[in-house]
Length: 202
Image (cartoon, rainbow, N blue to C red; front, side):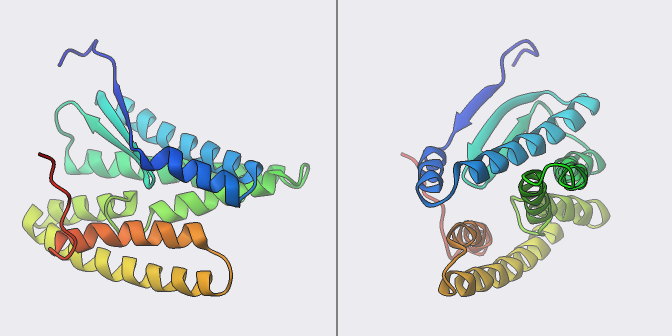
């Protein structure tokens, strides 16, 4: 692929469905704040990849976020830097917006969404940034096979606890989207241990 070729954007069918559901069940202001946080998050990744001189060839957008595919490979250290950049931008903006909230109260909502998205992405579950950071660190100090085994256990344990917390929140009358996110994250480690098999095309 030539470096002049445009970056391919692939949008999962789950994205418009989730957005429509969010519009029906939540406020447009909250949706706007979440989309702004997601945009800032991905721009953080893009800026770091650009600094590392990595070319993004495709971006796949799903209900759980965006996955960037690059030309060639990064080092383990480069992968960690690229992963941490997204949550770092969210947490920095959360601080700045919270400070601005003292002047304009609505900014507290935007600060909260930046904070939640940043912390959520630091969870040690693949395909989240925290999972990517931990996998690359483990592969760096051991080897990929060991990193896979450790991440499967850590990811399943974390996702299971998150799912139980989301079920409790839903039982209390809220947290519907939290439950959807938790179940989506639980699917990945289940697939790794062979409980949930990915659908095969063809």
